Amino acid sequence: FGSSLFGSSGASPPPPFCPPSHKVLRDSDTSPGNMDIDLLNPDAKEERSKHKLKRMIQSPNSFFMDVKCPGCLQITTVYSHAQTVVLCGNCNQMLCQPTGGLARLTEGCSFRKKVE
Image (cartoon, rainbow, N blue to C red):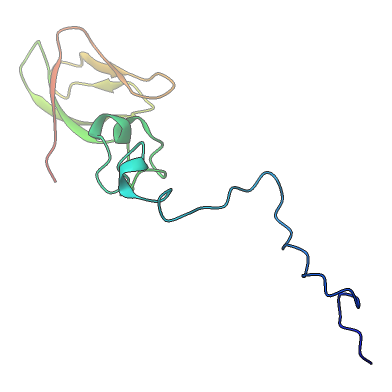
C-alpha cells in the first residue's frame, strides 16, 4: 500500500477541469472601472425604450389624458390606448380613433397627461 492515489511516481494531481469557453475572473477584471454601463443609474432614454417588465422599476406604457375638444373646448378624459372611437359629449366630434397601440388624436385636439 505504498502507492499514492496518482501513481507511485509522485506526480502532482491533474489541474481542475475548466472549459475553454469560461474565462477565469481575477480581482482586476471585476473592478468598477471596467463596466461599460452603470447598472445602478440607468440612462432615462434607455429605460423608456425597454419593455415595461424589463425596466429597473416596472411601469406601464399607458396613461389617462385630458383631451380638449377643438369645437366646444370641453375637456374629456381618454385612455391612451383606447380601443373604440371617443366622441365629445357636447358636440359629438371625434376626439380619437383606435390604432393597434396608442389611440390617434384627431387633428386640432390638444391633450395633457393626467397626474395621479
